[in-house]
Image (cartoon, rainbow, N blue to C red; front, side):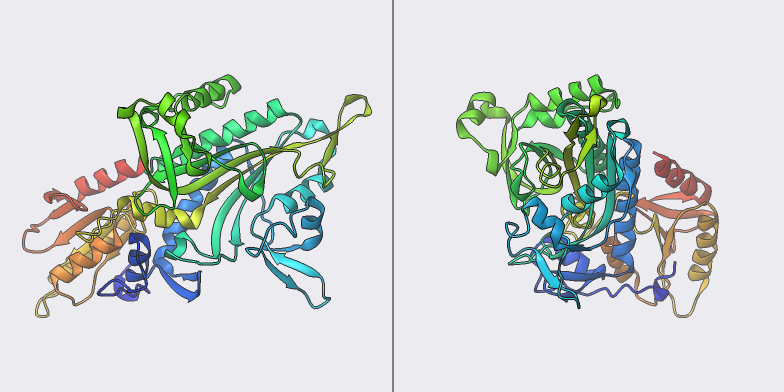
Length: 443
């Protein structure tokens, strides 16, 4: 894509309203535009990144046997009254009335709606387990929306729900999602640590938050540093393998501030292994048994005519929040350089021809390279603007394509200046460049 044709409204300086790295960068490179307090339009660059994250999340959900559905954003109040949460949820819930004066709401979460779907369609234990997920917009009317999309009112989220016959089977489903989340965040090049967490308004007695370390995080965390050394690459979806994985993680102290106990921390973690810092929540999983199935009468028929309320869990990932979380983890704000993981980068490579108003040869050469790269399924952003070279480099460093080709004085015949962003350049042939990028995209 030629940058002259794109809607990328890049600002020269950071917005005065933005106080954290992700908010500053997303406004500066035109990834988002604020519509109202805590509500944003997603512009082409930001949307492209978010959709790539969404696809990775989707693929990892599918791998554990979860089935994708799509539930509406607007929900009837009756199902929330059945569960008992309509009056308890608080002012974060946006309550509205339709033209028939019926109470409706903009969904902040979907436990009630998915339970209603399940109880209407599944009657026998033979149909269990059921793992259902969707990726949809949510709305929570935050009192003080801040930090851009990190703490906004409308956000894009993957939430999944498990339905099982008993606690043992339900824990197996829970552990599947536990592994799925570790793999999802690894593909995003994030180290997300599962932390024992409070269940909050969702309810239940088993919960883990997945936290990435960041100074700008709102969650205070207490952990044993050795948890970062754990490997889950050999974990399968077999029940025993998943149980072993959970035991690996559970042996190390790792909690958010709501669950923190100073005596336990000091007793179980040696001083040199204690980590007290802040982090960003990027995922949250809950097991809450029959908290929703019982009041909403979601049961299945067992052998012998007995009925059993199903056991449920819910599993959320903030897809839009992950865009900001990756920036917080990867953006060098001092040098103004962003490097997106190749798996979610807006473009694989930035093609930067030096501008000379009296000589178009660099741009012509860049256009030919652009076509060749496109033939090899490499997504390219070419800077065909008439800006000077230093301005182009600065702009492309902000946009954050992982690789760059510079077409200038050092480009000779089929050899070009090539670099991974924020690293030294080397002169390589176009074939070598294609080979390097293609190989990394396959990994």
